[in-house]
Image (tube, rainbow, N blue to C red; front, side):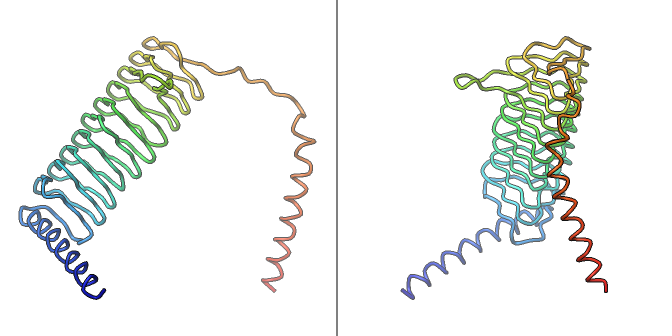
Length: 254
C-alpha cells in the first residue's frame, strides 16, 4: 500500500513539475503569470504582454493575443482570443473572440461563436454557433444561438433566440444598430431589420422591418380590487412578523 501511495505521489510531483515548466516557459517569453494554480497545455500559444490570472485553464490549440487578461477562474479550449480582450471567470470552447472584447463574468461561449471588435458578453450570457459583429453589447442573462448579429446592437436582459423546434435548428438574423428589448423571444427562423426595436416582453415570430418596433404581447387589463381579499391575510401575517421583530430589536437595545 505504501508503495502504491508513493507511486501516486511521484506521479503528481512529475505532473506538477511539467506544468510548472510550461508556466516558466511562457513567463520567459513575456507572459505575466503570478500563480501556480494556472494550467496551460503544451499546445497553447500566448503572446507577450498577456496576463493569466489564478485558476485559469488553457487547453488544446488555444491562441491568446497580446495584452489580454485571462481569468481569474476561466477555461478556454481550442479558441482564439484577440488582442486586449478580457475573459473573466468564463468558459470558451472552439470559438474566435475578437480584439478588445469584454467577456464575463460567468459567460458560456460555446462552439462556433465568432465575435468582432469591441463585443461585450456579460454575466450569464450563453452563445453558440453565432456571429456577432462589431460593438455588440449583451450584458446579462441572454442566450444567442444559431444567429447572425449586425454591428452595435444592444440586447436587453433575458433575450432568447428560440432556435430549436425539437427536430431542426433555425437561424435568427439581426441587422445593424438594433435594440432588442428585455425578455424578447426571437422564434427562428426570423429576422430583425437594421435599426429596429423589439418591445420588452415580446415573442417575435414574424420578421421586423428595418426601423420598426416589433410588439408581440397581450394587451394589459387591470381587474380593480381583485387582489385585496387575497392580500389581507398575507399583509396581516407580515405586519405581525414586523411587530415581533421590532419588539425583539427594542429588547436587545435595552
